[in-house]
Image 1 (spheres, rainbow, N blue to C red):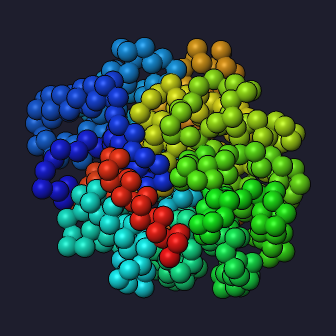
Image 2 (image 1 turned 90 degrees about the horizontal axis):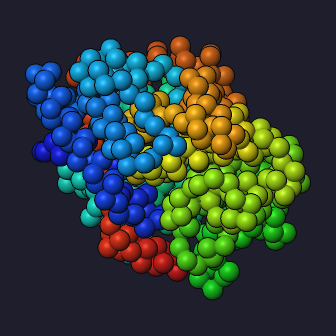
Length: 488
């Protein structure tokens, strides 16, 4: 590990935020789980005779961490979900690989990076100020900490240090002038990662803020420049500080014209941030009331709900019809409009899965409700990296996770079989984004990134760093800067 210390577990149970929600402090139980993992990994490293740092970077180190988490959670009454790990996985690499390894086609439909050398870093630019909150929080050892949020860092963290096969590069809520990654720069990243033979390892969203002048014209320009994987929008983002704070997708002035324009351009995927509230202003627009409405009106369009409507401040429990928050809000919208499971609404797991890893009962309810109501074919893997560093820990945790039989029987949740996990990891996303996964897999092993990874792995040097705000002070520094960004 290229850190000056070894005080990071390979499975990151911490308070890091992606900058969209206030960091949530670890509970006493979660701190106990981390302490248990530190003790377990120290003991296991001594037993195997491996140096502590080398052990933590091994598959056994990750398995031991998850085993310790599960032991602490289970001993304290969390029975709805489990990280199922054979105790021998702490010491035997083959047993560990069977528990948290795999050969799935993993298609991460939500990645981010910034351009540290972009024009947005000019003095006085709002996002330059905003991302300094990330600089204060992250543990990047480079002279310019934003280097750890760059394209090059993304390639290493995601494609070298995790089992991710393909990805979609997305955008943050911003005006076009202040964006820390422009659409043109996203396309440049795509060109770098795609192979000369036409193999596409990276797809790109095009950003759209319908309240910003010229938005529909920009949609047309984006679609003309490259095959757009989808249009990404934030219904709670409003560039006008005097405006309502957002919009609904079924709004006749903003939402419907956006959908109609995408439809006209032949782009079927409308990708919308829902659930995680960006700020108190316009918080109602983070809700999912409009999802079922537009899905019913446009059955030929796909509506991909980023973050699955999850509210990190409230968690997840069994479905309640009168609950207007989180996944229940999404389910209510689908039911009210007659949208059946596996129809044209999809739920994406970026940030959401990482948060519920801290509470296995939440995780069981979240996955159970999504698979039951949105559909086993319509839950998509996403991690919201690079804000959280490498997504490998999220991948390993999902491989080990199971919904308990008691929750399956009580709530009608499906079992998380290996076949179902393969769907979530990549096959569902491949279908909605038009990727031929079986044909793509052998190509990815031979493309420049695949070849470079094969050379890197024998001397793999992962970090377990995160790059987002980790406490409320850092978060509110970011929010103050973002308020300026809206006004600039």
